[in-house]
Image 1 (tube, rainbow, N blue to C red):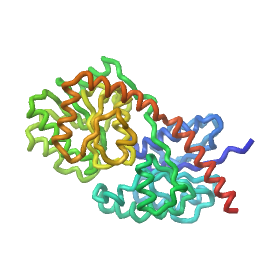
Image 2 (image 1 turned 30 degrees about the vertical axis):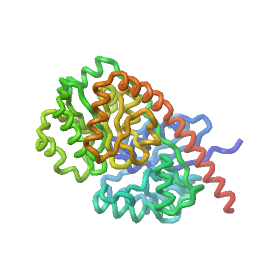
Image 3 (image 1 turned 120 degrees about the vertical axis):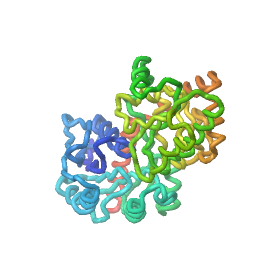
Image 4 (image 1 turned 135 degrees about the vertical axis):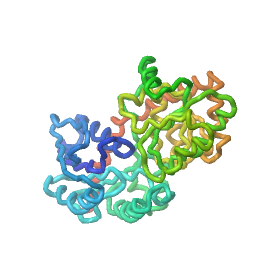
Length: 381
């Protein structure tokens, strides 16, 4: 039997509160550590980071003090290669877009979730966009294999980074196993907590320019003007460039109907999403689009933008609309609100669609990528 490869997974980019790439690291490391014949993991993580790695199965978590983003970046480039050597790992997996540019004494796997920093640099702050534009393409070219999360993202990586197609492997994200259709009393508790007395629409995303929330607010305002008695919940932590988004609700005369609960803990996600009359995601571009898929897993009908990976990931289980067309978004949501048959059909399709995306499958396919990276090493020798 072939020995299990030792893999160093760099989880140091995870903040205390999980979102986006942090959820990817959390669920992937959890499932990798539970594969019967999977790799032996060494996970590098900040001291305060929450992980669920099965250390009883021989996996290790190395805790590192990295209190600031600049210190973490310096550690990634200067100390992570050293750690790969002292831990004697076979593969270094950098799971969120960047990786050390210095030589590493192991095979390299990079997860490049998308290349929005090249396609839509205005989606990021200036310093972050410049850093990603410099580091991510170079890290991808140094990697033995690059994982990405959709065929859409793969096409962009091949075209904009210049990698050969065979070096980019698609491994879809999964839906968190704790998400599902909530009980009625859980939904009522969330409604009471957020003072939701009406039916409500929901969006869950980091509040930043690429999520296109001003357009969603305008579409919601249009629905209110049409006479729909609704609230809108915009859940998610603050990102950057969100100044004026909350003020827009006042300008549109809908401020009293909009809730901004901020970061939502795991135990409240299912009742919040499952209780929504419709989940609406008009993001300008997504390399995957996990929030609408998670909403489907909780039983919410979904309206989403027709750009990026949404058509690939959501298929016919959502109504897809142009992300900048306020009227088209309002019309699609209105169809869901007034047509119970359509809403029920979308819920049924959404549950089936979401069930096809699991972190267990993602972990199995990621483990296969590690083996492929090691096979490339053998060929090179």
